[in-house]
Image (cartoon, rainbow, N blue to C red; front, side, top):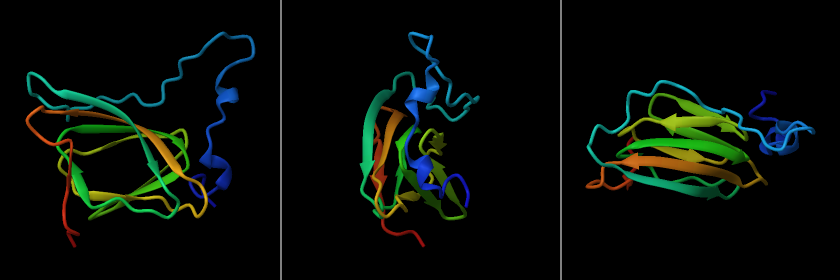
Amino acid sequence: MSAHEDPETTLIDFDALLPADAPHVRKILYEEAYEHLPRDPSVAIVVYIGVHNPKSYTAWHYHNGSSFFAVLQGRIEVEFEDEVRSFAAGDVYAEPIGKIHRAHNPDPAVKFVCVGFNATPPDREMVVSVEAPW
């Protein structure tokens, strides 16, 4: 069983992140050179909480800007035409601009919860739903 299939990985152990003798901590979860940020002189920044019920799917869709997600609880499978990417509590990931995909919470009992961050040119929709592409 991989870490992404283990029910114990569906929650972040916040107590383990903060040493007992420290008043606070900043733990880098995602640090990567990212060349796909919108090049427009101005972008709309959206930060939100996403919650997916157990066994649920999103509609097929794509993003018109850079999209980053920090998983707070549960597991998610992001299905693209050529691959499926899996993430669990504590993971941070990016979704490519303009690439059609959908997300699926494979867990039978735990809600998936994430914080999403999107940077989208102001003249475009952040998310565009599409018909099933294949």
